[in-house]
Length: 412
Image (spheres, one colour):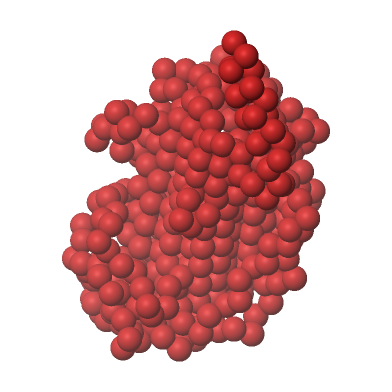
């Protein structure tokens, strides 16, 4: 007994002797209900039912944390306070489900809800975060429905991320949203930066990548979007909130989007309802339509389009981005008229890939080859919303500088 007591005292001495830079040990926790504080580096968090970060509190998630959602209760993650998910490229944070649940029939997820931020959430950062296999349908018993969040009704598929505070601040960078049932993001307010993210295999029968509404001022830059069911970017100032939706979207690579939603809105970028959209240096390859507009509820006349690049392997794809009343064309654009014209020369991507496929192969590489005609075609003199940055939790996050090439990736 005396020996055990001495060992306990010695262990306590070692712990109290650690300096503040030491990393706390990883944990294995089972959680539900209200959460706040810190989930330590490398921890495994099992979520049994809906989570809520309460008003006035925050949760910090350190690098390497894996959050495993129960696929029976299909939890929603409600953020009424603030969330700081701070992974690294070598050690990202992952919101997922048990490995045994990742079956082919769940390619589009629907196994848990999503991250839903109420108007009381003033700050959120998702940095090096993976969100996958979610988008469950809401019911009358859903916390989001009971609290009047998102669309506040049953029968809606949760987006991976919903943010709603027009006075709030949101940064999502270096992150991935994949295997999702519907919208990857649905943003109804805030000063926002989306940079260097990947969105793929999203939307079974509907769903956009970056879905922007009124109340939002956002820079969307250097993102890769592959095979969204509908649009990679859906830009609208609908909703009646202030400020007017103001979007600067530049240097994004958009591939194979829109074909799995054969309606008027399926495409690459959609603009409507008085959105003020500035669209530069975007590379759209094998997408359905070019930048498409709602002719009855058009974009703001202050919108600008320039230096975008279009490629289609088939004549059908090429025909759908030609100039018309519905296609918003700009200046200094690369837009051929024949199949396979202006091949951007990706390092490794089969140009003949079925447009209806939603699978992204790990061997594909969307960097530009050294002799790509997409190099040197980018514009760098435009103004972005957050060149000087957004300050969140004492850290300044800046929108990246535009590149002289088009698309999200230059040469290796």
